[in-house]
Image (cartoon, rainbow, N blue to C red; front, top):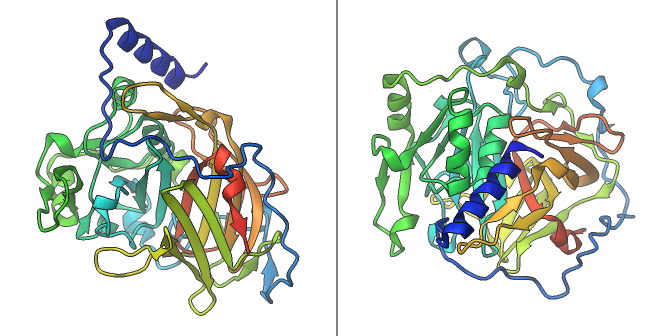
Length: 379
């Protein structure tokens, strides 16, 4: 059994023995919402029979793509990246909340990769990733607390991880891994954050990260920003000027759900080659009014366990791997994924079992509860 599960079991046992459930949740504490008609059998995504749009070539396999050329952004595959300056830079991963009181988030449209995942009570939270420290925008947030699953996710990419507080299970893991990885708890310093009180929301929805001050903090404290060699190229990308179709069928619209209160639809806009995102029927915009749009949309179905603590924390069972859907350029394909161990990188594979090749551009990766698979629809 993996270290994280041992930690989780021991932590839960100690808490129950003492009769004092100490794990605390951030944000609104609600019962998990189960959408009416939820299909727990997790059927395969239904096939699409419409005619495929005309594109230049079909989706390549990893062995059909050349080694990553110099000047390629490691998280987007786009050219023009300063490899001389950033070739050894860690990516930056920031935990950002998605409670209604946190919306619209500052910097929401800016991450190279946006991971989203369920935490407790049916609410979701996000991990925003940037290729290097200099790409972090002027304002990001609200920044929130770290869960053990997302700690593991960030470890796999050797990211410079930033959060505000953490769950008890995550705290118990940190002594094992902090010596080899770089992490900053904004709850322990105010050097690069401030509380934005211009909105009429609860205090926990106000912590804003300032990009310039973060860079100064990292530099002045001599924090390690050099990435491990094995983590330099976490994704495979097609050439930036290619427009690969995906062989599953058309995907002009993709709907998926974290819970009945967190439902998403992405609609393909051929004029820009991206999927514009909506949440609960409304455009998902950042604090500047820019709608979030992604070149790649990846939904990964993940098993989840209830940790049975007073805060209703969940455990994303990342070691089980699973299935998923990848949409790009108005088309889709079915995928699989796995994460071998606590510090292993999450890897995604195409229908033939080879590593998935993404089209060059920004990506949304949603970790959706397996029992919500039946609520995914493709048009």
